[in-house]
Image (cartoon, rainbow, N blue to C red; front, side, top):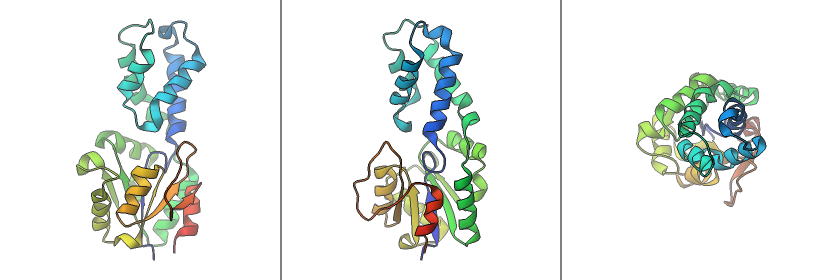
Length: 218
């Protein structure tokens, strides 16, 4: 019986790529005079490609984007500052995910969030999305000193919840960092399908929406 459900944050509980797309369009409009004669659509496409679904450093994104362009020296730093300043303004917590978390809590399951990233930034997202009160435990890699897919961070979450690995489920969007990491730690793994990665592991449950998770809880 599944007694606890653990979740990844970015790309799983909310659509991070949609947020980045909205921020990117805003940036291209806000800084249009400083981009010179660069094509707007090309800038948007290039920024989204360089973002690599969150696995690229922001400073590297803008440095690479502007390389070879005739722009002022401060533009890269200003773009990075603007990104962090307006990101949370575009964050939205899907009703489907909110309803699912409430249902899981009402059913007596313990809930935890396990996310990689800096404490300040991930905590700010949780506050903006209104997620903090849903979880019994929140583990952020910077604070823990260990990150997914290291089995230690999954084991630490289970220990705090008081649940054994076979009785816990982990839901995430990244095939290796989330799904493989959870499987290697002994949890039941669920892949929140995204269009930009493929799943090669067997014995992985697949969902397209968070609410579909309820069909896999026994």
